[in-house]
Length: 361
Ligand SMILES: *Cc1c(COP(=O)(O)O)cnc(C)c1O
Image (cartoon, rainbow, N blue to C red):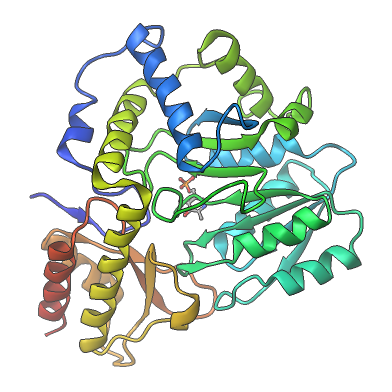
């Protein structure tokens, strides 16, 4: 049975994206090298920047976390201090990376149902003048909220801080201009809103900042500068690339363009979100976040107050019907999550809501 994934990734992908993986592909094949080139240029375009304008795209093998760790571990020097702005599990993951990589760091924490504010960030930067780098999550997939990255970026820019954004679950599904948002490093991956399959992450980097990372990496395989240097000098990856995932991604980028680009995709996801919210509300579900801070990528629904609700059984019954939802990851509340992204269309959301109604009976 075909299952639809209402998750934050991996996501449901189109048949044509999967078909792009049917031919074996050598890593030195001309067609592969061309695909890598096209993807690197195309991703910069999606972020509103270009190589000529001073930006670079570095593809890193592995899942999204590998890309974030590659940036965090490579761009911060021994004498630098990283500030991590945290309001969910993905922000905490960056703190963990800083610890393991032995990077000097400070943490500004917010509750999981609150956004990171530019005001608090500004105050924190004033109180901690040693901070050189700031890291923040755009779409905090833990809850589904969107942090006001542009305003936070303006605060960082005014104080000359390097600004790193994990836009993993939103890039491609939310219009973004890296330069206007004052982002120096933006990380996302192959299996989120661009709707490819898992296999790699990518860092979009301001070249002048990337160049400073030379010789500074804390890991061989995750050295961002060396990875970039390899791609630039030979067009090759240093180590075995995810060839088929790259071929699928190139197809996914074509399909994003055919859909009408990021604006059109964002509209489809927003429609999904609206239908989901309405449908679930009609069934009595309440959401964890206030509507004003919710993004349109994923929604967190509180467990019904009815004590007979059992998430395990709810999940399994939906799964049997072909609908895969996602558990919660909140520290203080019981909730589950439903994603609005991937090859999911309004009819699929209606079918999901109908199935939820059925399994609740
Ligand atoms: C998906 C995601 C990641 C990366 O997770 P992986 O499992 O390593 O792909 C990082 N940050 C956010 C906000 C995410 O949604």
